[in-house]
Image (cartoon, rainbow, N blue to C red; front, side, top):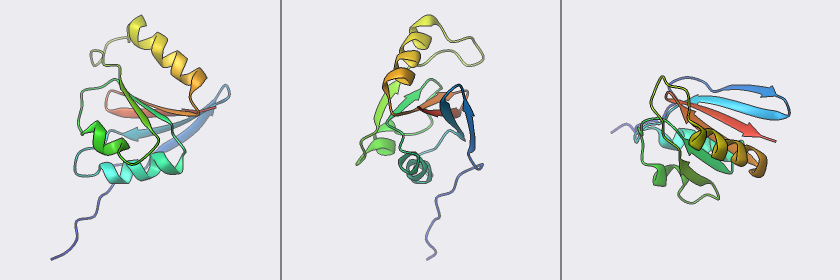
Length: 111
């Protein structure tokens, strides 16, 4: 029987802005989270912040790593409220790396 290969839906996009490095990725699923986990480890992400509807088990994504996982949900298609923006900004300033999930995408920032 062939082994199931865990794949990314799309290749991550990397860019820098004002001293931060961003990695934009599709949101993982329970079937392919290992491929995303590998990238998070390679990019030395230290905090994952999910603001979208869950599409994967967050415990599996960070299990066995030093990555901290935080949920800061808000309505899809809406502007994030201050109770999401303020913690996000604090994580950007404090964390070595951060991933932010919004509208089923990740934004990674490493200072």
